[in-house]
Each structure stands twice: as C-alpha cells, then as structure tokens.
Amino acid sequence: MSVHAINESYKHKIEIPYGIRLAFELKQKFNIDEPDLNTLINNIHNNPNSKKIMDYIQQDINNHLFLCKDCHLCKEEHHSQKVPGVGPLNSPLVLIGEGPGFDEDKAGKPFVGRAGQLLTTILNKLNVSREKVYITNIVKCRPPNNRQPLADETNKCSKNLELELMFIMPKVIITLGSTPLNYFKPNSRITKSRGKWIFKDNKLIMPTFHPAYILRQKGKNLVKIKWEVWHDFNKAVDKAKELCPEYNFKLHT
Image (cartoon, rainbow, N blue to C red; front, side, top):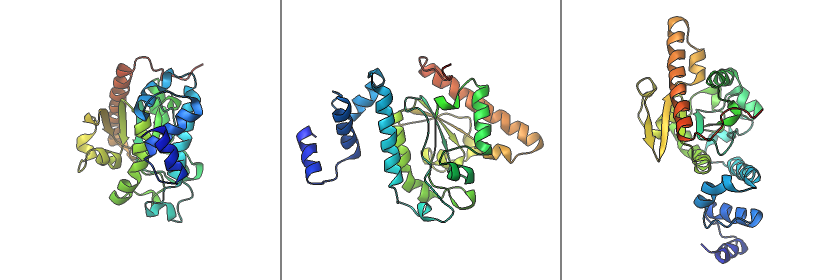
C-alpha cells in the first residue's frame, strides 16, 4: 500500500491492517526508509533511535491490548486490569506463562508473586538477568481463582501474544505450563512434552513446568521437578546464546 493510499485511508477513516498502519506511523515519526514492517523490524537495532522506536512499539502493543474486549475475562469482577508483557523487544528469549494471578493483577506486571520470584531465581542462577528477557502470558487478564485459562479464552487472547511475537521475533521460547504448550502444540501433555524441542514458525520452543507447579511439590517429587525445570531452562538459554552470541543476557553495570 502506498503512502498516498494510507493517507486516504486515514482521511476516510477506513480501517487498515495493523502492520501497515504502524509501519506508516514509524516512518513518519522517525524518518525511517524501510519499505515494509518486516524489513523495519529486522533493521531496527541498527537505527540510532532504536530505543525510542522500541518504546513506541511497546506502547502501541499495550494500547492495542488495553482496547481488547474479545473475551469475558476482562469483564469479570475478579479482574482489575490487563497485564501486558514486559522486557526488551530485541530479546532472543521469550517466556510465556498461562495468565496473571492475584499479585500480577494488582501490580499490572507478569510473574511478580511467589512463582515470579522463583522464576527470577532460576534465571539468575543461569547468569541471565530477568530484565534481559521478554516475559508475558498467553492471556492478559486474570482468570477466576487463578485457574488455567479455557481454550476459548486462549484462542481469543492469542492475537495479543501473536502481536508481541511478531515484533520480538524470538529465537527461543520457553512455555511455562500446559496452556501455552497446547497453544503451540495442541493436545499435548506437559509431562510428556517438557524438555523436548518443538519447532514451529521458525521458532524453537522449549516446554517446561510452570513455576507455580514447582511450589506445590513436596519431598522427592519437589527435587525431581526442580531438576527437570532447571534442565529445560538451561537447554533453552544455551540455545538462545548460541543463536544470538552478540546478545548480552546480563544487566549492564
């Protein structure tokens, strides 16, 4: 679509595809020459305004999410706000959970409760700063009583996840729990699939247990599950570092 056509679309309030609209806005605001959104994203980190551009894109993703009313979760009394993903859009590693819990719903950020603290500990022990990976959930509104999202809720909210992944273009994804696993590979069992690579849409996906599941374990089973999750994370982080050796997973000091 030409710039003239886009201008005409705005003039007559005709809805245009999201990617075309955002590409046009970025070109106008940051004087970018790339012909389309995919090329723009691929070259974004070579742009001197890359930080401002990524902040603009993140805000646009969040605005898109905040307008979403596709499923009933956003209308439930237990829900107080949508919880967008957080992290750098240039991260080669993305972590996808199931949905916000009570603490996340109050804070407006993913993985801030006990499960989030455990997640941070796992990353730190792998010499990875939490701030250097992108963390999100398959649904952005808290399900009642912190239950797993239903299939209909996952399907309707997945457009928000796809929007995030479109911009991040991660090399490696870690799915936390059965819900994000089944989004990428339907009819899968987490106990059978964890630790085994899934290749889909040019992405390497490593399924593992949700940190909240670890917190519910006791005795020998706790030790077993902790080592399995550690193994899965270690394998995924090593692969992300192998595919993007130039990316620094540590906080700048």
